[in-house]
Length: 196
Image 1 (cartoon, helix red, strand yellow):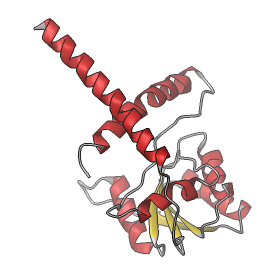
Image 2 (tube, helix red, strand yellow):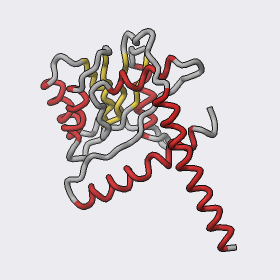
Image 3 (tube, one colour):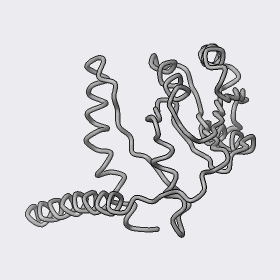
């Protein structure tokens, strides 16, 4: 029984690694060129204070270069005074960027708070393309231009980026970063090949 489990685990690991190699082989062999850029991209971010890097992360996204017209919808709990303060300071610091701070009431009992915020944000979005970012996600310069052209492929309805942690400021952050960075590719990519 142990040898069967060992062979199964080796086979499963080999399959996951092969799917990662296959994924990047397909993606880089024929990168798409976007025929028509979207008139407006709405970036929805459910925000919750508590992360000490929140101001830097949100500020990075506002400063990231993009040729696309963007609107940021920051979905902040009404009772999150620290989150409102951080977001208000950033809106003031980046007057040339369209940011809408949407204060959210507490979700109904039994409703996921993040999903509740995103549904409300979607209803308020004006963009032709909707991007959902966690509040600890940073968009690289030109990241939207690299990702969104994949939506022009026939049958595509979703494009995604892979998580990569960059915070190695202390031992705990380093452990989390190492865990995420070594597990994101084999965790997310292989299963995308199982179903359209």
